[in-house]
Length: 144
Image (cartoon, rainbow, N blue to C red; front, side, top):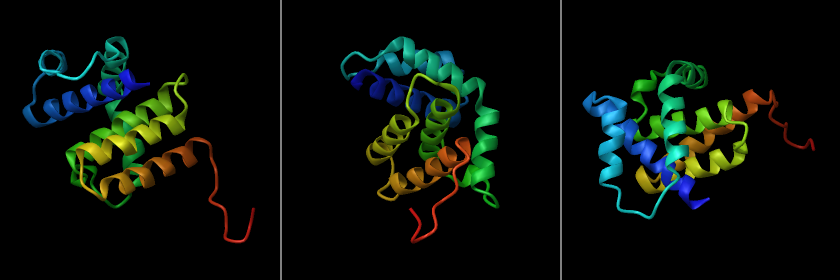
C-alpha cells in the first residue's frame, strides 16, 4: 500500500529529527508533515506507528541489542537504526501487517535513504528478528 510506505517514510524522518535535534515527537512530526511534498499518506497509520515506536523504543532496542551482541546499537547509522526500529515495531506489535511486508518495506526504504550496503544489513537483522519471533532454526545445508 503506497500510503503506508509514505507513512513509514514520514515516521523515519520524524525519528531522525527527534534523535538529531532532541525536538519533541509532536513538533517534529508536525514540521515534517507540513513540508511533505509527496501524495497523501495514511496519517492515522503514521501517528499509530510513530506513537508505537517512541513508546516501545526501549523494548525494541533491547531486541536489537540482543541481535547485534557485542556491538553498541549507537554505532548503527541513525537512519538504519530507525528503519530497524520501525520494522521491529511492526513485526512484534502489529498483527495486522504481515511480517514479511514490514521486512520488505524496511529493505526498500533502506535502499532509498541509506547506503548501498544498508539494505543487506537491514535484511540480515530483520531475518533474525523473524526467526526469533517464530523460534525458527536455520536449516542446515542439505536438509529440506
